[in-house]
Amino acid sequence: MVEDGREHKVAIVTGAARGIGLATARWFLQRQWRVAIIDKDAPALNAARDQLEWEAPGRAIALPCDVSNPVQVEAMVAMVDTEWERIDALVNNAGVAVFKPLVQTSFEEWRHVMATNLDGAFLCSQAVVPVMRKRGGAIVNIASISGLRASTLRVAYGTSKAALIHFTRQQAVELAGLGIRSNAIAPGPVETAMAKQVHTPEIRADYHAAVPLARYGSEEEIANGIGFLCSPEASYITGQVLAVDGGFDAAGVGLP
Ligand code: NAD
Image (tube, rainbow, N blue to C red; front, side, top):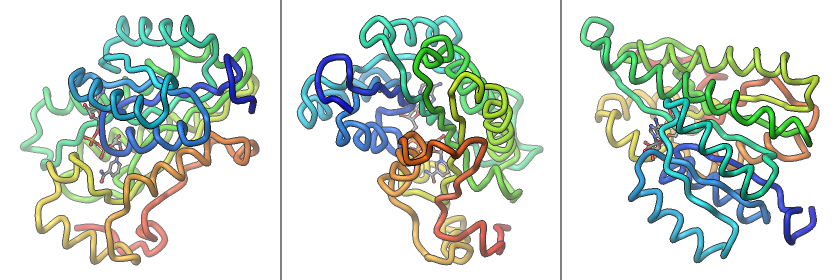
């Protein structure tokens, strides 16, 4: 990788104003990529951009965008294409969580989760393909262990993530001929704003009991998995789900 001008690789990371997305943007910047950070929370996004500008001057741009809005997604990808004329990686990380039982989940909450977690990945993937196919590239969809195993309270969230995993496989098969790989990461519990919002003390205790490493993962540990799947070291890996989960899936203990 040449480290000047247009030879820097380019990544788009959605939901990158904070949490796993921001850590992933840093993973790319530390390896001399250029990064477009995307989020619908414009003030938080601009604050993140200011931090990244200080850490990696001139290599990050911030584009406010709601990934569930087709018009905004098209405009966002067009801006990245205009700016850098290439897209080597797309990380569909933007997500929301509603942890409620079926009968207490409103249709609006169900639609909000599906629109963000599933429609957002569909729209962003569809929009980048015409640019990414020029050189090949990698798409990584951020799923969850809740998309691998069923448990209470995750009817909307878990269903959206299970669908995202199958979407990943569909993409991998369809886009292989264009030189585009597609993989998913299934994080275990990670200490982010999302976890603070939906992980009650009871849920935290359940995770500690079910995760063999007996702790939450860090944002950076998830970013390492995402970055690997976008890197040339993963050039023969497509259609896979990498669980970065402290052994949760292997143990098969499950959650209530
Ligand atoms: P977070 O809530 O800290 O960050 C998510 C970001 O996505 C926020 O900045 C938010 O503004 C943004 N966002 C939400 N809806 C958006 C939209 N429509 N358009 C653009 N941006 C939007 O969450 P996190 O914990 O960093 O989670 C990142 C991803 O990892 C999510 O997909 C989440 O489901 C997944 N995940 C998280 C955990 C965990 O324990 N934290 C576990 C498994 C999977």
